[in-house]
Length: 153
Length: 83
Image (cartoon, rainbow over all chains, first blue to last red; front, side, top):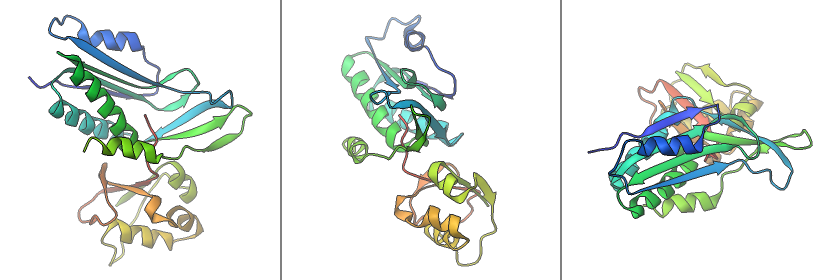
């Protein structure tokens, strides 16, 4: 049976543990859950916050396309993707991916794939605000992220 | 047709979105960027290096050679940095 992914794009923080538990609640067929949480770093104390801009509608749409690709490729029993936008302070979560499957390999690989594709395809942009109050620049896309996504082709 | 701009493309044009009537001869995303560049210094700053711009038609990624056809909403933005 095809799994129906949970996808949320939101400004509010989320509870990593609760989101992970929702995937397995009442289930006895799931053998493993892999979760990844992307956090805002303070860059050695120089960063006050990240500001994430997104393209409403397309953000949800693109995450759904990436999630559908993952469910076609791996036998997943559950899948959750949450991505935040707005101002995010160091230590706070930005993105959450959780995958559930019967055996671990599918969950590990699908979570890895999802993050590589989200980074290069989901329409979000990070701007840095420095600890000294200066509005920083836009974070530049990294070639290493493109290379990471390429390896799944 | 509606055009939306995000991140530094939005900051450089000074607009989040606008409605435009396409002139004859503007048939692809690439043509549209070239035409926009000629509309003023702010647009020239945003679209001076079109290879650095990503494009979506009706909220789906496309390449610069994509034809505008019946598209309602075009968006221009930098390479994504989410995750």
